Length: 213
Image (cartoon, rainbow, N blue to C red):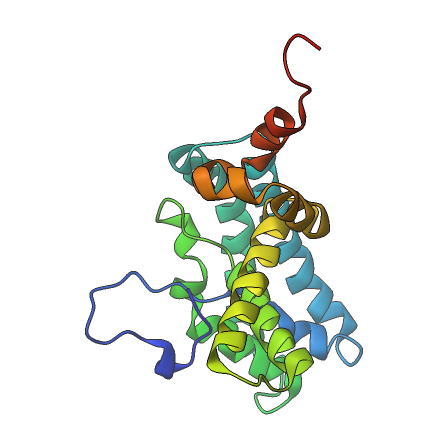
């Protein structure tokens, strides 16, 4: 999963390459004020696809069930969108060099990779999770500016990774780090019990009053 830049293609590996739907969507968002009717047509279709994906997550569907749901509910929407895109070009309803024309050209050119989720189980709609993670690293680098030693940089990276992992687990990074600092011996003895996704049980046990009191 990536944008459509060829530099992102892992040429030495056999892959199923999906393109990020958010990148395609952004082209229409950027020109929506100039082409409100046309962009609304595209954005509403993509919104419906994301709504279907949200239903799949909310209902905890298996990859196979999610695929079937998208094939049932998203495919007709996207088939209609594809036909509309073709009409804009073949009937010359859009200037190819305009912002709208370029957005349509991108969507048409990469259609198969942008719609891989209609054919492959677990294919994501976009690359947003990875891009948010990359932005964490960039923000961390910007805030840190410089480290005095390589070890200091390593420690900073470890904390960045821990904080982001806690956020992905919908936890509170500050509370998690405080829990680790309060129970260093327990963490050292059983680190697997103090991961961001499962530490609450270990914390409750560590904070429980001794039996018999």
